Amino acid sequence: MTPTDEAPQSAGDDPLAPRRLHGRAQVGAEPRAFGQPAEDTLRRLALACRDAAATGEPPADFLQIHIDRLLGKTFSPEDCATLVNVQRLADEGLAVAMSGRLDGAASRLLRANRALEDGGLAPPARSLGESLLWAREAESETRAGRYEWAAELMEAAFERDLAAEEAGLELFLAHRIRLAHARMRLDMARERFGEALLLGASLLHYFERPSEPPCTNLRPSWRQGWRDHRGVIDPALAADLHRRLAEDQVAALAALEAKEGAKAAVELRRFSPGGSSQIAGWTQFQIARLEGDEGRRNEAARAVLMAGPHPSAPLCGSVAAALLA
Image 1 (cartoon, rainbow, N blue to C red):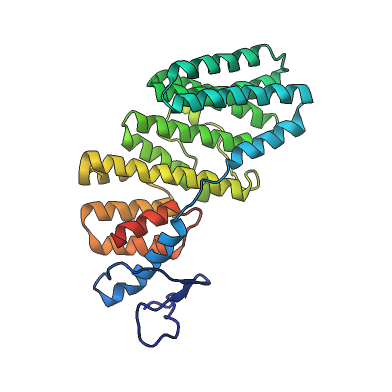
Image 2: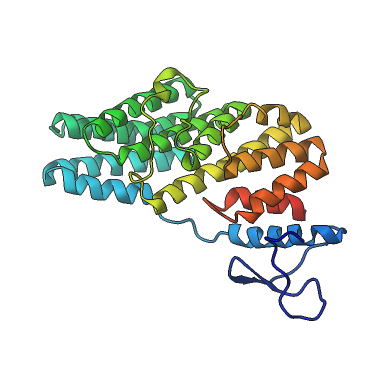
């Protein structure tokens, strides 16, 4: 047992007795043991992270809440009402697209475009309206399989967000992260899982290492304007953005592994961060797992699990699930 490991609480010599980890008692049904006494701590860490990663109802969209507040404080009541209406119509269109009714989605998105055109918005408000509309329209186009047009819409919205930041609306750095996440999902829809994993890893790493800008595998326009997000993006919002990205990172690897098997490790090796982070540790764990190196796998797993579900739970939860399978 290493100096950082905690001894089981008083429960005789029962190695399966509940213990305290990070200040909380860990209880619940135990899966099979790893069979090595030295790995007992690793198993317990996996149990803790598995429980932390368990989710119930999806949380609210924190970014949209922050955007609504910012619009209300920044623009006139008339402009704000127009922007809210454009987003409402676009949200309806996206929801219809997600249900598979693409014709109905197109008609609603056309109404959103008309509302923006007829709203008489001043240039700053209009630019933001375009970004918020195009982001939703791009997701609908992705659903329809019109990938090139979707990518162009995302890139145009990204440029509008940069302009908004330069005008003092710093929150739109978070919206640019959301757009880059949508770009990752586009790659997943095209079954370009290696590209999706590299983009997702760079974005997740950026949360912990903001001096290492993301999107290095995208066109130059996506690589502009990245700066230290600390003090700009609320910590709760940052955690929510990280969690959503991490969920798709896990899903992208599962899809790639189903398609390529152990060859997925080759794609994971493309991510070469300059410093440590949760995603860096997760990537090393997955490479070792795919390559069948149990020693490296357990070493990487310990590093991820000891840090707990921070910045968010999905990555440590997937490590725990792999260990406890």
